[in-house]
Image 1 (cartoon, rainbow, N blue to C red):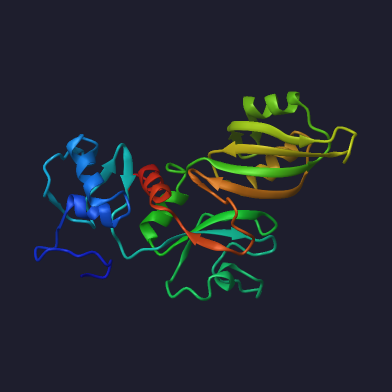
Image 2 (image 1 turned 30 degrees about the horizontal axis):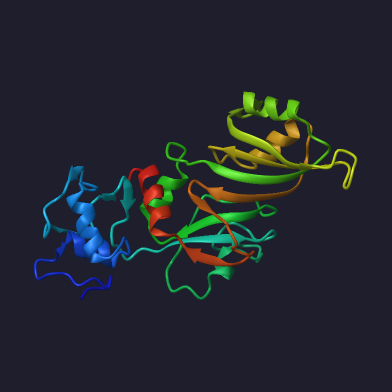
Length: 256
């Protein structure tokens, strides 16, 4: 037994079907079937021989095309950051920050990117420095989904303008998806629209500046997803670990 809880052999390796089963992919028998069907790939090669051993810390394993993260001592967390919390692990002004929300965690955590203090929603935390740096680098940034409540009654023409691209003082912004979630248009709540946007980058206050540029100042803003990771039912201030599927997809995005 090692720190990961896996039962390794004396050579520090583990049989592939055993690793798959202990990782929660399926039962040992089903994992053997997946291997025999050619659906398990290790380091780029299909493995069908039962009893094949792998290093759980370094092997790049895919099951039916989906990445199975390596066994590691690192933690990968998703937090629903409340409004008013500063997206740093400390604050010289004494404002409430991320470390206040993770005070019960023993690890030294890094935040992946940041959110404006007045923006709520999804932020990733980890003690894996390489992962944090890669995920925050512009070359590897994944799609980020935001829901904004804006002033004014927005119509499809503005959505089209956003999808065509907006150029701000520091360069153009590409919006890959945009849709109006609700717009009262003079009925129940005049002068208010809720819009969902998917963008690829993370420049400072980019969503607020973009919507302000097209004439719709933001009242409230929430990041609801980063790539495959979504808030779901996570309440403000709550935290959970990434699932294996979520982590696998993010590791692929960061080319780790």
